[in-house]
Length: 379
View (cartoon, rainbow, N blue to C red):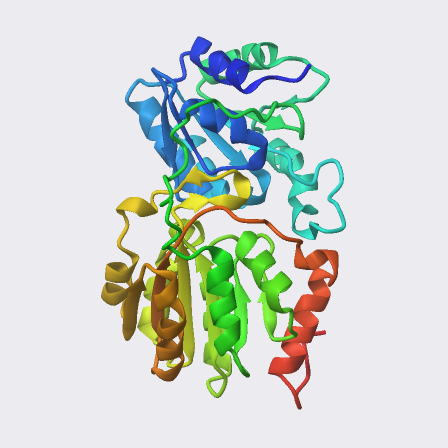
């Protein structure tokens, strides 16, 4: 039986859960909306899945039972705090993991192929009990009753959630998204991508997972574009490696606030090595647009201040559509590393994935062939 969003959160409340930490997934869009205004349960939007698990563990240590919401593509971020904190210290935390790519990943989302297969086996190898929540039953209450003795024994319990098992309904009046200005002064992601493409010549462009990559592909597909699907938070590090390996080329990163927050330590590495050929453009719309518009914690984060303190040579902040293209022109002329923070609007058409027309391996091959012309390309 399909579980409604309200029934999902009610079941958490009935099992005394007082805090939920998580990273959004479209499978959990409805429950996260409910949690945004649910009395008695504190929802914490975590920077990454490992942080979410540690936060939940801290709540449990303080006597407040807690749960985690995450998607299986970020399960790797959970492994360290699971194996070095929660298991050895015997902290009972309830963890919900969406099973994207299970039982089989679609051809357009190959990044879900491996995690769609291995999470149950990995949990078995760690002797961590897990249950499945399926569209055709059993229901959430029955599944959570099965986790109760596991948690009582001091162990974590995982609930693996199949697609469609939770009805993705939005709660009316939910304060889970950042209010956007009505006058449209702030640019949207299409405005940003249009401005970047207007200035790009021979530069190589990396775009983060989600709608920014879709916008870049739909507005201007080219072999020198690398569209990330998955690997959230790692686009700046990917670009850093290329920038250090090919100092004669210029690299542009199209990043998002949620992505940067997930692995913000990458900024310090970029700043430390200070590649002069790297332009880092951060689109800060303060939401996870591709999973339903849930708010990030970017509203209280000064990315420009952090970048300056991390060693970026040039930092600029803009907050109007008219200012974007001149700022990009300036960034392309300057010696980097440069961070351009563009405060933007959420929303807009999602567009088609690049992988619907160009396979993910081909995206890498053609990008590498352009970058290593005259040398051995990526095989």
